[in-house]
Amino acid sequence: MALTQLAVVSTAVDILQQFGLADLSMRRLAKELDVQVGALYWHVKNKQELLAQVAAKLLNTPQLSVNADDFSTPADTILQLSRRLYLALLPIQDSPEVIEVATAMQATELSPVLQLRELLEASGLSAENARHGQQLLLNHILGSVAFRQNLVQLDVDAPLADGFDWGLQRAVAGLVS
Image 1 (tube, rainbow, N blue to C red):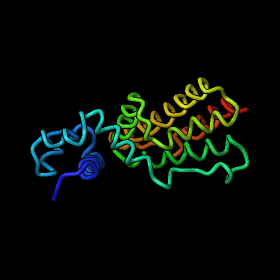
Image 2 (cartoon, rainbow, N blue to C red):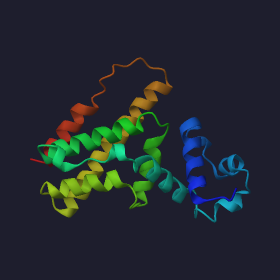
Image 3 (cartoon, rainbow, N blue to C red):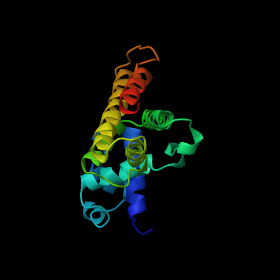
Image 4 (tube, one colour):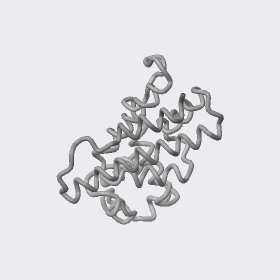
């Protein structure tokens, strides 16, 4: 079977989900695909680009898209999209780090992240303030996911309510009035 970009990214997602980011090396990926490491670079420039593509595969799913017409206010739409992002990333080991790399690279393929900014702009924020609001919400989502994942890894008994939704509601209320 010929090596494709889809196979490279899908296998990288599988490694991330099963073993975490620490085990997602180009060597490990090549071994899983039964190819030489150099063959991977025909499909991705470097590990950062690979992580951006992994992030896109994790986020660009129908479950993460929201239709603003389904909600009574822009704030409700933003809340729902943020909650969906949180719940989608929670079971995937090290997903906050992967999404952070992709957003730092200004990856344009992250549909839900771009939709957050569009919703903030549609609610009346300037383009610049919408970018800042998008970053604020992403920091809260990714930080909350990382916190919850750390509790699980450390086997710490913690209440199910970790303050994510409370903080999210306050952040959105401050952004969209």
